[in-house]
Image 1 (tube, rainbow, N blue to C red):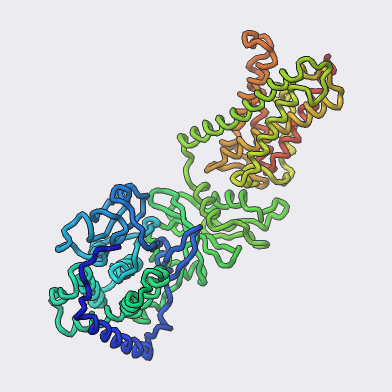
Image 2 (cartoon, helix red, strand yellow):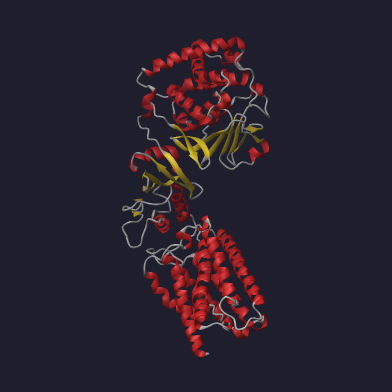
Length: 610
C-alpha cells in the first residue's frame, strides 16, 4: 500500500462528508442542465484481453490500463520493462524516471525522491502533457495498484492528453486548478490546501469537486469495503464523472467512438490499425487522424462481424493495397478459387473483404497479413528461419535414420523380408509419423501455411512435366536395394506411396510452411513467381536426397562413382517444381500426388532395365 501523509485528519472528517453531500446536490442540479450525463458519451470501458481485464478509452484505443490491488515491481524490473510501459503512483517501487529511449516511465512521489517538494502523480502527468507528450506513436500499457483520486486523475489525463494539449488554456483552467489542489492534498496533506494560493471562490469550487469525486472512495473505506472493489469498474465510473465536469456536451458533437481491435508496425513511422466503429470509413477519417496522427498508413474498419473496409490513409506511402489483397486472399479460408468474385479486392486506395461470405479472419490475423505483405524481406531473418527449419528437418530425418538402423538390427537374420521388416519402411514410416504428429499440433494447423487442406485450382497441373523430368534426373529417392524379399505390391506401397508421402509432408508441408513466416508465397489465383519458401525448402530437400543417395553406396569414399552432382541439381529442381505445385494448389497432397507419379515412372523404367 502507498504511504501517503495523513490526508484527511479526524477534525476534517465531518467537514469532508458534508462537502460530499453538497457535491451530490450539485450533481443533481447538473443532471437537469442540457449537458447532462445522458448526453455525454460513455467513452471508458473495461474489456477482456486474452486472460486479462483492461480499461480503455474509445478516443485513445492504443492506451490500456491495468489496475491490480497490491501490484508492484522492483525499480530494476521497471527499467527493464517492455517498450510502451507506464507505472503510476507506487506501482514501481523506485524513483520516478523517464526513459524516452525505451519508452518506459515511472510517475511517482513515494520512493527515491524528496517527497516534500516532489509533485504528485497527477501533476507530473499534466506537466508532461503541457510539454507536448504525445502517446499516439505506439501501444501503451499503464499499470496502477490502487484507484485513489491522484491515480484516477492521472489516468484521465493520459486518456485525454490529446484534447488537453489542443484546448485553449482559458477553457480548461479549472482542470489545472483541480489537478493542482488534488496533487497538493495527496502529496502534502489537507492542511496544505492554502498553499495553492487559489482565490477563495476557486478553492471552494475545486474542493467541492474533489469531495464529489471522492465521495464513494471515502464511504467505501469507512465501511471497510475498499479492498473488495473492482478497481477497473470503479475507475471507469470516476472517469465518466470527470468528463461531465471538464467537458461540455458540444465538445462531443463530432465524437465517433472507435474501438481498436489490432495494430501492427509496418515501418518505423507507419502503422496499420484494425478498428471498429458505427460510421463509414470516410466519416471516420477525421477521427482517425485525431487518434493516430500521421502514423496511420492503412486502416481496416470492421463494419460487422465478418465485413471489413480497408483504406490507404497516406497517399504518399510506398505501398498500395494490392500486396495486402494477395496476402489476405492467401490466408482467408473464405476465399475459394472457384469463386473469383468472393475475395479481398478493390482499388489501390480502398477495398474490402469478400462480398459473398465475408471473411473468416480475426482482426489480429488481418493486421498480421498487412505486416507480412508490406514489410521488406529481411535477409538476416530469412537466414535465421532457414537455419531453424534446417535443424527441425534434420531432427526428423535423423529420427528416421535411427529407426532404419533399428530395423536393420532387428530383422538382419530374417530372410526373405516383407514390407514391415524392410529398413526402408522403418525409415519412411518414422518420418511420416513424426511429421504428421508435428503438423497436428495447434501451432501448425494453419491450412494456408502448411497445406493441410484439399487441393484448389487446376493450373498447378502445368508443372507435372517439370516434376517428372526433375524426378527422373535424380529428384526421386528410390531405395531399390531394399526391394529384396518384397513382392510387387509391397514395393509399390513403399516406393510409390509411403516414401513420396513422407518426404512431401516433411519438405513441402512442414519445411515450406515454416519458411512462409513473413514471406510471400503463391496461391491458386495469384501471379506466378518463385518464392523464398519454395527455394529454401528445395535447398533442404536437395541436401536430404544427397544424403539418402550417399547412404545407398555403403561407402562415402565411393560417392563420385555412384552418383554425381547432377543428382543434387535434379533434386533441387524437383523441390522447386514441387514447391510451386504446393503453393498453387494450397495443399501438400498435390505435390505428394506428383511425387508418386514421378516415383512410378522411375520405378517402371528402372525395373525395365533390371
